[in-house]
Each structure stands twice: as C-alpha cells, then as structure tokens.
Image 1 (tube, one colour):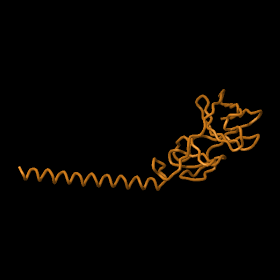
Image 2 (cartoon, rainbow, N blue to C red):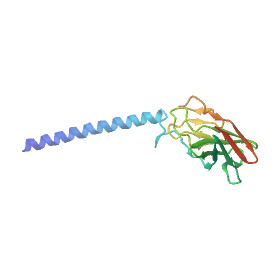
Image 3 (tube, rainbow, N blue to C red):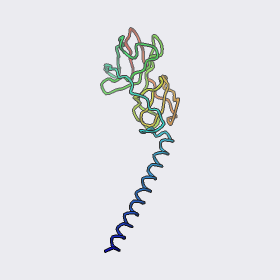
Image 4 (cartoon, rainbow, N blue to C red):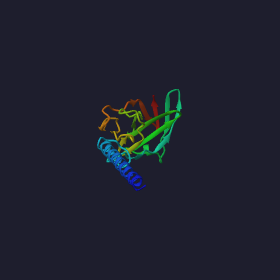
Length: 161
C-alpha cells in the first residue's frame, strides 16, 4: 500500500512537471507573438481605440453622408468609420473642401480596420497603421488601403464605390 501511494505521488509530480513545461512553452510562444506584432491583449502593439461611427445613405453604389456640426468629419483632421447599408468606409477630413475615403479591409490579413491611434487608422487584429491617405506607416501590412473617389460639397460627402 505504501508503494502504491509512493507511485501515485511520483506520477502526480511527473504530471505536474509535464503541465508546467507545457505552460512555460505556451507563455514563450505568446511572448514571441507579441514581439512579432501579435496585437493581442497584453502585447506592446498599440491598436488604438474605436473610430467614431457615422451613418450614410447608400443608393446604387453611391453613399452620401451629411456632415453636421457634431460630426467627427466637421473639422479638418477628423476621422470616422462610415457605415451605410452593407458598406463601410474610412473617411478623413483632409481640407475644408475635401475628404479622403478608404476601404476598411486591412491589406495584411483582411481584418476590418476600425480603430485610430494618434490620427492614423489602426487595424485591431495585428496593429498595422495607415495614414489618412491610406499609406502604410507601420506594418505588418505592406500595401496601402484602396481609395474611393469622393466629393465634399455643401457639407455632403459623396462616396462612389
């Protein structure tokens, strides 16, 4: 009986050591992912905060957005996520009479870019960052975001795409 108990304690110690090695291996892998731009919770990648969302109207592939005094696009430098009937766009007010409109699809792994940090669009999946014109300012993405033709007239933004 004493031998059986000693055998059970040995087995428990072995199991403990095996589990400890597995946990240590997982922690090491998580650390490597964070260093590679993993962007997950606790990583050093800044994924920013959610962009303000504004609604638009979409008819026959054309989206219109009315920009009022409370809109994030009311002032130059403002960024927003525009959503309209099955379509979404990243919009930046680049001057008094112009906006730049981009796809929300990250060129790295096709996640939805929906965040901003320090006036750049940020992908919440892996931390790729794009300036308001869609140019990559930090990878892992290497290609710019697709830009849509747009016009701003009388506080109405029109997006073709």
